Length: 196
Image 1 (tube, one colour):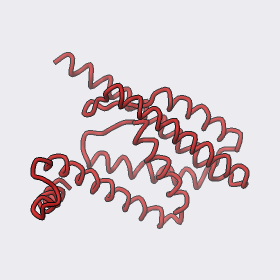
Image 2: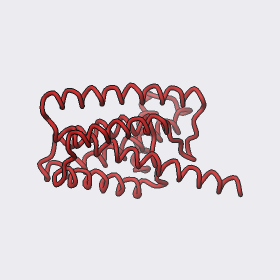
Image 3: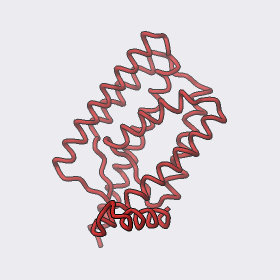
Image 4: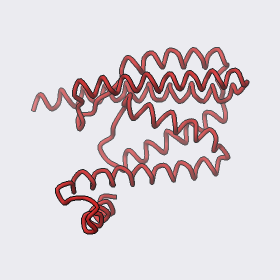
């Protein structure tokens, strides 16, 4: 991915779309975008094979929005992140296809998880520590996303789409777990850096 992102960045600089001084920024942006696209395409392929495209769409939208602003565990290489992302997505769809939370349990899981997600947000990474204004912005956007999730869940509940409510419960639970794993990883890496 890095080599392809370098070629793309070289091309946009060559045609004059961006300045050479911005090379590192664009190269990193292209690399992250290509990695996300690759993971998305593989997960979409798995969802198509499993005949779970609506579930894939709901999981992906909620997961990407909340993970972007609330944070979570960040692995140190594309390979590890790719494998983890595909496994988490596939396991979520498999679990959702076999087991469903009751509406009461799902709503309780969503409520408790949302409170804990908001409390922990945003989770920092050792590679990207946030300034106080960035933290405030991420927490605010996380709250707005959670309000959107509650609105979606309310609509699904009214419409009798209890399977979707169960999927949302599973999704926010996975995000919550990712956050607290991310918090632990950050603390371990931070204390390791301070000792060196």
